[in-house]
Length: 342
Image (cartoon, rainbow, N blue to C red; front, top):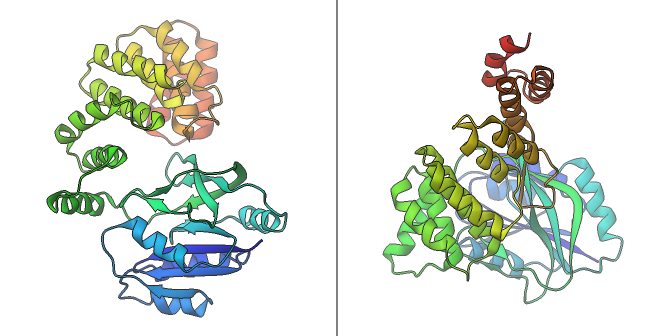
């Protein structure tokens, strides 16, 4: 089996210098430049990548599919220039490639950098067939096909900048040009509006999307969580509970949903009910969409320490405070709570 790695880039010379030496497991690396004016192309060529140029059209799928069209491997792996592959991942991919893979569609953990890292499963290695095609001009993805499997390894995403403003510009340009947004596009457009602080424009789109049974179940559930958070920001606990109740009719509650349930009771000082939901948040949710140490560890530990303290269970409260302290000892909340547990 042979494996092609494809990367679309623009002004990524520094990130490519970090990423390309990590790709020794690949039989070829295809780099598609979409209009760089730095040394991106020179860096790609110096590392032996196959370099192609693509006139940018505000369509990420078009660029990625152009890269796939120039790949020759049995499988295609896609990366962003600001991704990082740990040594364990590099070794695992070399072993996987030499094991005569039988599946068509492979997921890997995609680890997002931050104060509290989180990860989710994302398609990363796909058999190169006519079904290996990205869809969606922004927030692009390949639809699963054939036999799917999960590889026990990580890709770390380490962005150097936020793309919220850029993405909003792409959406607005497409809408102005008369492009009709599909269901998934409308969901991500609403999220982009939120990322740019445009809540009043985003909320009605999310409400309509969450009620549309044609939409992807996971995306509908995420939209309901967002609506619950917006309700809680207004201290509208009744609406938050309605959105969360609709969420659990679609999917089992993940760590974040449990914490949102907990917040609705915590803010009303219903300590026992809040504590039950925060305890549920600590249950392993690795099979669900997003696994976030903040919602699956730190936040429920902090909130349980407060709930139990208010309930008079001081020893157990101290244990949860110490658990939160082990995760983030310098977090302002941990420091503020420390005097209560000395």
